[in-house]
Amino acid sequence: MEVSKKTTSRALYYVVLLVATSTACNQVSRKLQPTADGASIRGAGFVTLRKIGDLPEKNGWFSIQFEDKQRGWLANGLNLWRTTDGGRNWNVIYKVDEHEFVERIDKVFFVNSCKGWMLRPSGFYRTIDQGITWAAVTTPLDYPKGSLVSFYFSNDKDGWIVGGLYHPKSLKDFLRESHPNEAVITRQDNSRAVLQASIFRTYDGGETWHECSIPSVSYRIILINFSDSDHGVIVGDEDVMSTEDGGKNWRLSIFPKECNDQNRENIYEYGPIALSFLDRHGGWLSYKDGRLAKSTDGGHSWCDLLQPQEVWAPDEQNAFFQKLYFTDTLNGWGLKANGSLFGTENGGVTWVNVDTSIRYDDLFFLNKEYGWSVSKEGLFQFEGRAP
Image (tube, rainbow, N blue to C red; front, side, top):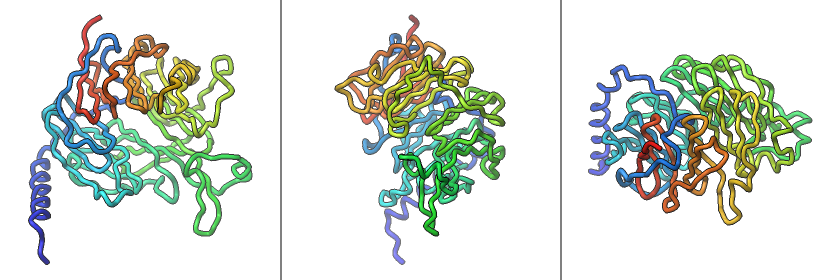
């Protein structure tokens, strides 16, 4: 069989790259806490955005992560790139077959230089060589037993996967007028099954999974975040829960009538989309109708902070906050689904448009001093000054 020069060159490239990284990946890497929902630099009034460089291409929707000031990853659904010079140059380390849509990259996160996790429609994957090769990881939430929606890892051993497990459809489920997308399936025997929210934890990097005990709620868990090893919040299609013991026990959050609008529209169509859990004193939850809720007691209770019309202007499209990041109880960032970047200096009561000229895809903050934003126009770094 004749092998093309292009195929040979590509194969040789990956062999060289794999050899070059194998030594580094055998070294002990420092622990990296995922800080996407709890770190930023100063508020909107004290920052500028400085362009670092161009992206390797402009197709797709980009996500960004950095391990330190120099090393980071960039993904756009079909490709994964790595930088070792702060984002000025990018080298492709993994490519998805563009004809295999089911293999697209939905979410990728690295816990250190070598070890990372990737979620695709086809399953859950793990890498130990900086993202060059990926191996499928079997989980209790694999389809058709369940639906894996998101994940969270605090280091290379300890992590959680969230979503739902399919159970026979009950009369109560049958009488409901609507369900979230993919909440109900038809099995091979023509019986109907509905999702019940589930969360599993691993202590050994995904080798084994242990189901966590949570209150019985319907459908899926879609968001998860921890502020430290003990305090965390999970958000479902219908309910919010918090923990104070590392996820061993979860309690349902409350939404008091005296501080929440009880006349909400379709809970699934306008459900939660973004979570920022800073600490036991500060948490923010964004909804797809534009509403913004806040917790000041570790996620135990939530009150409306902003109504939809205060976030979503009449002439805007996709104006809800799809990403939220807070430094402390006052200063934070909100990235709308239309790419508009906003900042707040009063805990989310009011927001200021940081940059009206560029539409951004993603944000990532390493700590209070270093943050990046990515758009089709390039990679930008936040630069702050004292007030």
